[in-house]
Length: 425
Image 1: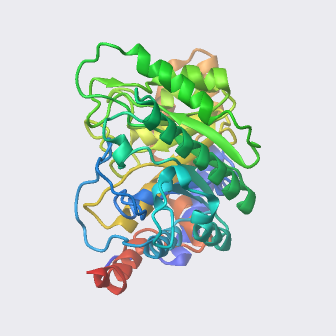
Image 2: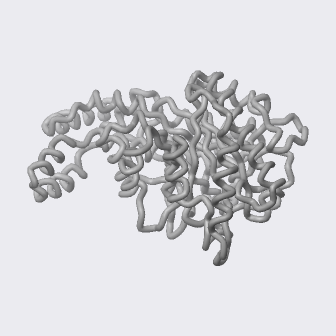
Image 3: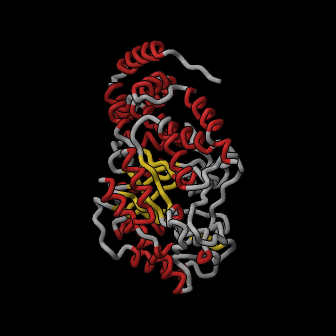
C-alpha cells in the first residue's frame, strides 16, 4: 500500500542529518543511545476497549468509556497478548507492558477482586519474561457492583471501603511478585473514580476517608526494588463532573507526605493545562513520577497520542533536565474506532519521536541564550530547530532496531488485520 526510501537512502539521509546536528553541537549517536534506554509502558486496555477477562458481573463503567466498534478486538488474554506482541514488533526499543487487575486469568473460576493473587497473572508474567519486557500494574476500581455508588476507597459504606482496600493490597502484592519475577520493579498505580455528578455539600468527609483507606492500603512495607506505589489524580470524570475526591491537590499532598510516586495524566487536568509545566515542580519534592500520556480533545477523551505540541513539551521537560531516570512513562488511551494495534503503534512511536526530538535539541545553545538574557535569540533558535532533520534520524534508528521504517508498519498492521483480526468475526 505504502512505500518508503531504500535502506541506502535512509543511511545517506542519516549521514547528512548527523552533520547538520553536529553543526549545532549535537551528538546524534549519543542521543540514540539515550533513547534506547528509555522504556515506554504500553497499556493493555487499548487492545480490548477496557473490557478485561474476569468473571465478575460488571454493572458500572465508573468513568471509563471506549467509543467505537472496529472489528477484530481481542476477546481472550491469548488474543490480547498476540496483538500486543505484534504491536511491540513494530516499535523500536525494549519496553514494558501495563496490566489492569481485571485482566486476571482465573481458569473459569469466579475470583473477586479482593481475592486476586499472583497466580492469576502467571501467564502474563511468563509472556513478559519470554519477550524481555518489564511490567506495571493497576488496581481496577471500576466496572464492578461495588463501584456502582460512584465511591470505592472513599465510600461511606465501611464494607465497600474494606473490599477496595483489600483489592488494592492484593494488587500491591501482585506488583511485587511481577517485579521479583521480571527483575524490574512494577509501578502499581492507584486510580479511583470516586466523585459526584452534581454539587456536593460535604467535600471533606470523603477525602478524610480516602486518606485513611490509602494509609491502610500502603501499610504493608514492600521493597521498592520489587514494587513502586503511585497515586493518580483527576479533575473530573464521567459521572463525577462536579467533584472528584482524589484531586490533584489531594494526591500531591498525599504523595509528598507518604513518599509515593505521583501520577500525572495528560488528560486529567483543565484543557488549557499541560503536564509538562508540572513535572519539574513536582520533582522538586518527589524522587520519582509516573506519567500517563494521553490526548484529551475538549475533555478527558483519551485519544491516541500524536506528535503534537503538548507531547513535545512533555518530552522536552524530561530530557532538558535529565529526568528520564526519575520518570516512568506509560500510555493511557483507548480508541475502539480504529485498528487497535495501529493505535498502540501510533501512540508509542509518537512518544518515542517526541523524546528523540528532545534529545536532538541543542539545549546548551538555548540555555546559553536564556542565561545571557537574549530572549530574542532563544525564540528564534526554538523556531529554527523545529525543521531540523529529526525524521532522518528516526528512520535510521528504526532500521537499526529491525522494525519497519516510515509507513511500512502500516502495511504490516493491514496484513495482520487480514490474516488474524478479520477472522475473529
